[in-house]
Length: 534
Image (cartoon, rainbow, N blue to C red; front, side):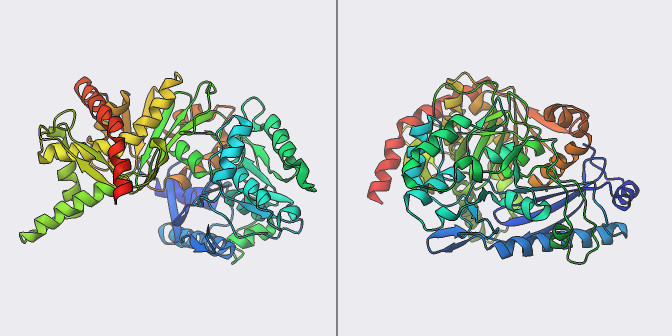
């Protein structure tokens, strides 16, 4: 991955129709990224959007999907014309990504039967539990099959008319190419995947049909689910109608080959070179989660762990925690207010960097103190709602450096519990890639994460475009994989020259974090008492 973009080569790639486009529908932004033969972004465009809470459902208008797609693409083309003086008339390949899971049921005429129910909705608890018991396989509330079961058990009128069920990325691909397929990673967030066949688990499909046999439905589950394709396969071509949906000006010609649509989890794995067994990545922002590519299936069902797949079809164990950096940020900003009381000003970067780096001088265990960063509930810890709190004993070493280390440790506490579940299954991690706001200050959270999991942690110059760049790489892989496994392709063609900073775990930090975790696990009753009392 070369840092500098060759301007003349980029213009040539665009003019000759070799440039590859990746688009990702994120929760707050639709991002379009164009890459050249060097695999680095050469242009980008974006559009801000957001979900709405309507009649108790978190949703996005489908009109906003197309307004946002066109606007992001138009922004991209303006960027191209400004930087390179050319127009995009042909593309080498195109890939679509989106927020995983959710519920988009269509009738035989292609009409959406309900509002789009996003991954944010938590209305499917009973269905999630019933299906987990039925399949002996964890089915989180946000999965599409949990939403479908919820609609059926609620006797919703539209259920009998379902002809096709898909996700946001699948919906966009369908309208652009006419094909109803998903990438295997995206499909794994709809319904469990059989790792041997690379498609939906037939035993569980039959179990679901048997469960609903008394409902007299006219469809069987296999009839309404999309096809499943691995990375490298083709998923149709951009149709004339699809080209106009993307570019109403008519400048973009149809016929662009499209790759299977993927979810944001899969594109994140690609963008961090974490798609091979025993590799993993941690993303830390408002929430924090780790995805570990497994060598073997887990022996037991764990509600703390979501099982999905990489875009190449390898199984991934995901430990997802609702609470990431929000409480930590609040404390840092509070200290910023203290500075302001004395008539001083400090920019945000300096404020965060200085306080984070101070934590490096703290005691290895955080000085015997304890914190929970739960603004929301944390299912990994069995906590239904959140009460951020800080506690210490008279014997604790109550200093600023220990206070900061304690809160940085707390941001990783629930994640460590989830990863310990995987460790208990014998899962091994060779390399961990970290990204997100928590790791913005070099060498701090990275060092503490390495201590928390006792594994080297790498931070690199990943393109800021993130998932949209990862989606463009998947589209490029479809064109020139040369038979390589996706992991080998990324290693050899994309990340071979990437600059990475790797921190090995310090034995003192490892022992200190373990001491903190002993308090963290034992003190959860304090958090539960706070929920009852406040």
